[in-house]
Length: 204
Image (cartoon, rainbow, N blue to C red; front, side):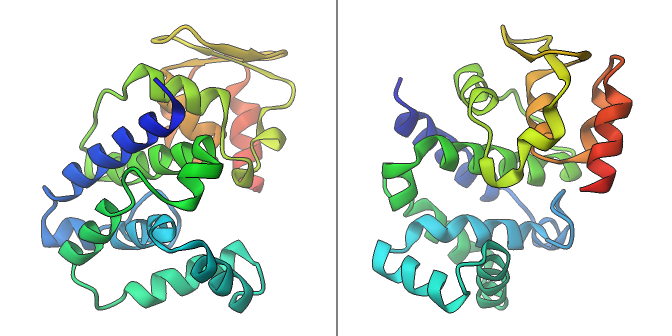
């Protein structure tokens, strides 16, 4: 299955999950510091904009990802959750990032899906093909190299390992989340390299 299909499936699953959330769930904190569930979804709407509009928004934000995210979150305040989900659904099977950088978009969607699920205690079994693609192609904007150098990661539930050095063992989902900079998953990992990773996450 191609990466674009994996991305479409991930977005489809996320939309279906979001439609099950309560009003309180939408206001709950996610694993993204300072972002509620609704803010994470607002961020994920970037692929609903045509390329000219996206570039215009990028220019207005000085081509700063941080400022673009802040503007997207601000625009979503007051928007009802159903409308946010409807907008996200329109990105399925399309979008500039889905076309030109599908692995990046898949990593963003999958990690943020888990950013929502974990604090709500709504676990899922991540489809292995999607998980392996994200492990092989982490989001470069999440600065994974600085966290992973000198460490060897070994997944316990899928056939995947990467790196050299002190070892870190755990489920592939927890490894992917740790590489993306989520300290909340450290309790799900084991091995001599965990404390090194903990220190790096604390300083980032």
